[in-house]
Length: 167
Image (cartoon, rainbow, N blue to C red):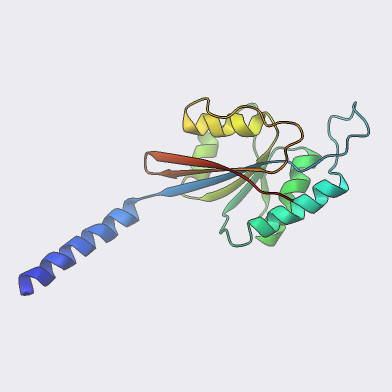
Protein backbone atom coordinates (compact mmCIF):
# COMPACT_ATOMS: atom_id res chain seq x y z
CA UNK A 1 0.00 0.00 0.00
CA UNK A 2 2.78 2.42 0.95
CA UNK A 3 4.60 1.62 -2.32
CA UNK A 4 1.38 2.24 -4.25
CA UNK A 5 1.01 5.68 -2.66
CA UNK A 6 4.64 6.57 -3.40
CA UNK A 7 4.24 5.34 -6.98
CA UNK A 8 1.04 7.40 -7.37
CA UNK A 9 2.79 10.50 -6.00
CA UNK A 10 5.65 10.03 -8.45
CA UNK A 11 3.22 9.73 -11.37
CA UNK A 12 1.21 12.77 -10.27
CA UNK A 13 4.40 14.74 -9.78
CA UNK A 14 5.67 13.85 -13.24
CA UNK A 15 2.30 14.78 -14.79
CA UNK A 16 2.44 18.13 -13.04
CA UNK A 17 5.96 18.75 -14.34
CA UNK A 18 4.85 17.74 -17.85
CA UNK A 19 1.85 20.12 -17.66
CA UNK A 20 4.13 22.96 -16.56
CA UNK A 21 6.47 22.26 -19.49
CA UNK A 22 3.56 22.37 -21.94
CA UNK A 23 2.97 25.71 -23.58
CA UNK A 24 -0.37 26.45 -25.15
CA UNK A 25 -0.80 29.20 -27.71
CA UNK A 26 -4.28 29.97 -29.01
CA UNK A 27 -5.04 32.30 -31.88
CA UNK A 28 -8.51 33.58 -32.74
CA UNK A 29 -8.65 35.03 -36.26
CA UNK A 30 -11.49 37.15 -37.60
CA UNK A 31 -11.98 39.35 -40.61
CA UNK A 32 -13.01 42.96 -40.06
CA UNK A 33 -16.74 43.61 -39.81
CA UNK A 34 -18.88 45.14 -42.58
CA UNK A 35 -17.35 48.32 -43.97
CA UNK A 36 -18.86 51.40 -45.60
CA UNK A 37 -18.99 50.78 -49.36
CA UNK A 38 -20.30 54.12 -50.63
CA UNK A 39 -16.94 55.25 -52.05
CA UNK A 40 -15.08 52.57 -54.01
CA UNK A 41 -11.97 54.79 -54.17
CA UNK A 42 -11.65 54.90 -50.36
CA UNK A 43 -8.93 52.40 -49.40
CA UNK A 44 -9.43 52.96 -45.68
CA UNK A 45 -13.19 53.00 -44.99
CA UNK A 46 -14.81 52.94 -41.58
CA UNK A 47 -17.26 50.30 -40.46
CA UNK A 48 -20.90 50.57 -41.50
CA UNK A 49 -23.60 50.52 -38.81
CA UNK A 50 -23.98 46.77 -39.27
CA UNK A 51 -20.21 46.41 -38.88
CA UNK A 52 -20.15 48.48 -35.68
CA UNK A 53 -22.87 46.22 -34.31
CA UNK A 54 -20.92 43.10 -35.33
CA UNK A 55 -17.76 44.48 -33.69
CA UNK A 56 -19.69 44.83 -30.41
CA UNK A 57 -20.98 41.29 -30.89
CA UNK A 58 -17.41 39.99 -31.25
CA UNK A 59 -16.68 41.48 -27.81
CA UNK A 60 -19.59 39.41 -26.48
CA UNK A 61 -18.29 36.29 -28.23
CA UNK A 62 -14.89 36.77 -26.56
CA UNK A 63 -16.34 37.76 -23.17
CA UNK A 64 -15.24 34.54 -21.44
CA UNK A 65 -11.97 34.14 -23.34
CA UNK A 66 -8.90 35.25 -21.38
CA UNK A 67 -7.17 37.16 -24.15
CA UNK A 68 -3.60 38.33 -23.54
CA UNK A 69 -3.15 40.27 -26.77
CA UNK A 70 -5.23 41.83 -29.54
CA UNK A 71 -3.62 42.39 -32.95
CA UNK A 72 -4.96 44.30 -35.92
CA UNK A 73 -3.72 45.74 -39.17
CA UNK A 74 -3.52 49.53 -39.13
CA UNK A 75 -6.75 50.23 -41.03
CA UNK A 76 -9.94 51.88 -39.78
CA UNK A 77 -12.14 48.83 -40.40
CA UNK A 78 -9.86 46.37 -38.57
CA UNK A 79 -9.16 48.73 -35.68
CA UNK A 80 -12.87 49.46 -35.28
CA UNK A 81 -13.59 45.72 -35.30
CA UNK A 82 -10.92 44.98 -32.69
CA UNK A 83 -11.64 47.96 -30.47
CA UNK A 84 -14.72 46.79 -28.49
CA UNK A 85 -13.03 43.49 -27.59
CA UNK A 86 -9.73 45.16 -26.70
CA UNK A 87 -11.52 47.74 -24.53
CA UNK A 88 -13.53 45.06 -22.75
CA UNK A 89 -10.26 43.27 -21.89
CA UNK A 90 -8.33 46.47 -21.05
CA UNK A 91 -5.82 45.63 -23.77
CA UNK A 92 -4.06 47.91 -26.21
CA UNK A 93 -4.32 46.94 -29.85
CA UNK A 94 -1.00 45.83 -31.29
CA UNK A 95 -0.27 46.14 -35.00
CA UNK A 96 0.96 43.48 -37.36
CA UNK A 97 2.18 43.81 -40.90
CA UNK A 98 -0.18 41.98 -43.30
CA UNK A 99 2.77 41.55 -45.68
CA UNK A 100 4.83 39.70 -43.04
CA UNK A 101 2.48 37.12 -41.55
CA UNK A 102 3.60 34.94 -38.63
CA UNK A 103 6.98 36.64 -38.40
CA UNK A 104 9.58 35.54 -35.87
CA UNK A 105 8.84 38.67 -33.82
CA UNK A 106 5.10 37.87 -33.80
CA UNK A 107 5.79 34.25 -32.78
CA UNK A 108 8.07 35.38 -29.97
CA UNK A 109 5.53 37.88 -28.59
CA UNK A 110 2.55 35.52 -28.81
CA UNK A 111 3.91 32.11 -27.81
CA UNK A 112 2.10 30.80 -24.75
CA UNK A 113 -0.60 33.47 -25.07
CA UNK A 114 -4.22 33.70 -26.15
CA UNK A 115 -4.45 36.16 -29.02
CA UNK A 116 -7.14 37.79 -31.15
CA UNK A 117 -5.99 38.75 -34.66
CA UNK A 118 -8.21 40.96 -36.82
CA UNK A 119 -7.45 41.03 -40.53
CA UNK A 120 -8.89 40.99 -44.00
CA UNK A 121 -10.58 38.60 -46.43
CA UNK A 122 -7.26 37.62 -47.98
CA UNK A 123 -4.78 37.99 -45.10
CA UNK A 124 -6.76 36.17 -42.41
CA UNK A 125 -6.80 32.74 -44.11
CA UNK A 126 -3.21 33.27 -45.30
CA UNK A 127 -2.13 33.95 -41.72
CA UNK A 128 -3.87 30.76 -40.53
CA UNK A 129 -2.27 28.77 -43.36
CA UNK A 130 1.17 30.13 -42.45
CA UNK A 131 0.78 28.84 -38.89
CA UNK A 132 -0.58 25.49 -40.07
CA UNK A 133 2.20 25.11 -42.63
CA UNK A 134 -0.29 24.16 -45.34
CA UNK A 135 -2.65 25.79 -47.83
CA UNK A 136 -5.86 24.74 -46.09
CA UNK A 137 -7.99 27.89 -46.29
CA UNK A 138 -8.72 30.14 -49.26
CA UNK A 139 -9.68 33.82 -49.24
CA UNK A 140 -12.88 34.71 -47.40
CA UNK A 141 -15.80 35.66 -49.60
CA UNK A 142 -16.32 39.43 -49.56
CA UNK A 143 -19.81 39.02 -48.09
CA UNK A 144 -18.55 36.91 -45.17
CA UNK A 145 -17.73 38.76 -41.97
CA UNK A 146 -18.66 35.94 -39.60
CA UNK A 147 -15.82 33.42 -39.86
CA UNK A 148 -13.83 32.61 -36.74
CA UNK A 149 -10.67 30.58 -37.16
CA UNK A 150 -9.23 29.09 -33.98
CA UNK A 151 -5.68 27.73 -34.05
CA UNK A 152 -4.18 26.05 -31.00
CA UNK A 153 -0.54 25.10 -30.64
CA UNK A 154 0.43 22.72 -27.83
CA UNK A 155 4.15 22.13 -27.94
CA UNK A 156 4.54 20.96 -31.56
CA UNK A 157 0.92 19.86 -32.15
CA UNK A 158 -1.27 22.28 -34.10
CA UNK A 159 -5.04 22.03 -34.34
CA UNK A 160 -7.55 24.32 -36.03
CA UNK A 161 -11.24 24.82 -36.50
CA UNK A 162 -13.34 27.22 -38.55
CA UNK A 163 -16.63 28.43 -37.08
CA UNK A 164 -19.31 30.75 -38.39
CA UNK A 165 -20.56 33.22 -35.79
CA UNK A 166 -23.72 34.92 -37.04
CA UNK A 167 -24.47 38.51 -36.12
